[in-house]
Amino acid sequence: MEPIRIMIPEVHEAIEKRDFRALKEALQEFHPQDIVDLLRTMEPADRLILFRLLAKDRAAEVFSFLELDEQKDLLSRFTEQNLKEIIVEMSPDDRTDLLDELPAGVVKRLLVLLDPAERAVANELLNYPESSAGRLMTPEFVDLNADMTVDEAIQRIRQTGPDKETIYYAYVTDATRTLKGMVSLRTLLLAKPGTRIEEIMKEEPIRVRTADDQESVAHVIRKYDLLAVPVVDREERLVGIVTVDDVVDVIADEATEDIQKMGAIEAAEEGYFQTGFFSLARRRILWLMILLVTATLSGSILEHYTAALQAAVILVFFIPMLMNTGGSTGTQSATLIIRGLATGEIDVRQVGRVVARESLMGVLLGSAMGLLGFLRAILVPGSDPNVWFTVGLTLILTVTAANMTGALLPIAAKLLRADPAIMAGPVIATIMDATTLLIYFEIARRLLGIG
Image: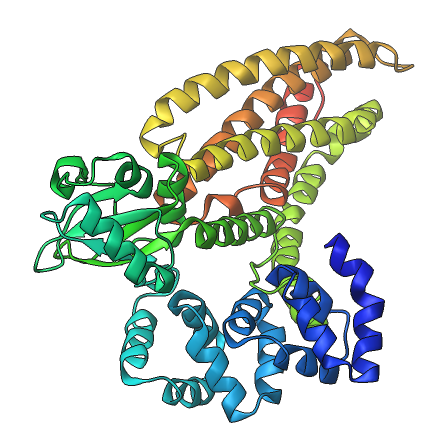
């Protein structure tokens, strides 16, 4: 970004002077993402001018880096010829991402610009379920025959490679396109020229299916440290590949969605500034209303124990500390479990191990917090040993309960096929507020003989 940042004033000056030849030459030196950053500093009309200075293939690459609203804005300004050049030059997977977000009328208009073969590919990818491997993949891969020699394979890569998404992996198929193996470019280059592919290929390579969720595809690529993973249909026929650059976007999108859900916000695909003001408010207010209603449970508990509070007003002093500790502990535990479920480190079948581990952890943390709370209660004027023990015991039980609640709720959500991320942050805190008050007042009622 730094070189392009330095050039921003010069670019604007070149546009004003209509010195397009110098500008066109300068743009060839920069990465497409840097050109995107440059476009974002310009007025819409100037963006169009700069975009038209790019070569067709480079323009398509830059276009694929733009946000959806930026793409839509440019599409509305392009001539029919500009549209055709961009849509034809885009890679099939990037094209699918774009078409997937556009109105049906615009999609039909763009599909007409493609030749029949490209149109068939676009329609095929769009027919796969949303957020599936089929929708994410590209059909541009290198395929080889098992009876080829290394020399023949390398020659084929030279001939077909420029049009493929990646050449680091080549996939071995038979006459019916059934996936038989995989060979890396490194393996090909280090093998003897006359060696047959079937002798050096890796049989039964890691693969995903067209219907697999894109998050599970990302997990496979991350787990096995792949640059790309083959995608097969129900008959084990190779239909495409998903590359690591597409997975990076998926991981970022899924992480954003999880973070939003953990903050009790309805997930949104658009960025912060790309989301309309009232749309953002609507996504936030629903969960806030739900949490407001559920939070009244804590008020009902306080109302139920009014007599106890009147008999021992000093109990009020410790309520904020106790409720905050319970909510924080539950959120910590939930965060660890949600992350473990997301990465595959924790399986729902391991619920027994999770319960054992978190219950022991709760007792340990609770004992430490209980001791600290006990000592804090001693320092409060007017308190007595019964109050000290009430606070200490409450913290032990609250932290243990919060640890268990934070661990079990995400697993329960997973078992119910819901997103575990919804069981975090505000949800856990709200549940633990009510639980903490119940524990606190029941212990106080018994130790202090009130209520």
